[in-house]
Amino acid sequence: MTLLDGKTLSQTIKNEIAAEVAKRTAAGQRPPHLAAVLIGDDPASQAYVRNKVRSCEQVGFQSTLIRRGADISQKELMDIVIELNANPDIHGFIVQLPLPAHLNENEVLLAISPEKDVDGFHPMNVGLMALGMPRYLPATPYGILQMLERYEIPTEGKNCLIIGRSNIVGTPLSLLLSRKGYPGNCTVTLAHSRTQNLPELARQADILIAAIGQPKKITADMVKEGAVVIDVGINRVEDPSAQRGYRLVGDVDFENVAPKCSYITPVPGGVGPMTVTSLLLNTLQAAQNTTTRPNAT
Ligand code: GUN
Image 1 (tube, rainbow, N blue to C red):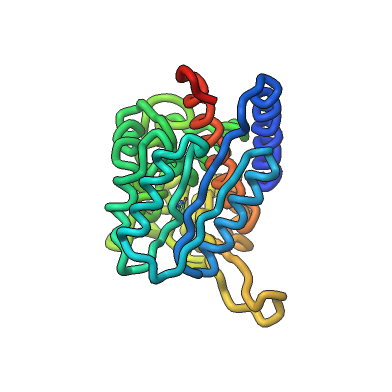
Image 2 (image 1 turned 120 degrees about the horizontal axis):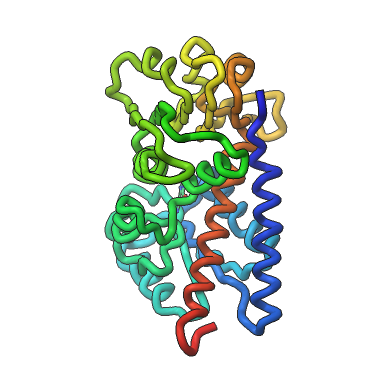
């Protein structure tokens, strides 16, 4: 069994990004600049955004955090998006999800300029991805593709079961892994909460990707011997012995599943760090695309 070490791999990629930033600045160009909009005080969202800002600093990007209270109006949030679209200092930006219930998430995502949509959530970018003309791939699927690629894991002709059909993980990943090319050419099954016989389907999977959001749902009896298991889950479970009162566990019962796998991601330290790195790669690309236009740095 080989551990898919997202922590180390993401550091390798961050070093590569930092080298690209150094090249840009040596050529007299501004470093890439990412802005993040964080609404409300959801602890997980705060932690994710903090991590994104810290990662920007590590690779020499500029970053701007825009924080507003959960009582912000739709109009005020839309005005922030419109301002960021027009701001030539910002190469790319994200609006952290989920938004408080009174806000219209779709309207916000539609308003983000597709050129600055480094999350890859705008329908234009989703469409480009679906048709094999990707601009910005969504961060979690992109991180998983990089992991498969850098570990040189064969994907062609493999049975791939993705569990979870969210717009930001399962659905885009099902498109990307069934596409021609590498990583891809899988026979993809997209399972979800209404799927019947999940354990049976899971046992047929050469590559099993769990994005369910329920701790330890994938148990050893559901996994084929020699499977590649990718765990997207980041679940907080109470743990009085932990410093923060909780610990993070994945969707996979790692301890019992790992011995059956050829490759498996740990949680934490697997997919999570790769996701942040993907956002940095998209932001670097946004900056480089901007720079190739006349009179832009
Ligand atoms: N919430 C959970 N994952 C993400 C992500 O990748 N981007 C944004 N904007 N919000 C998220």
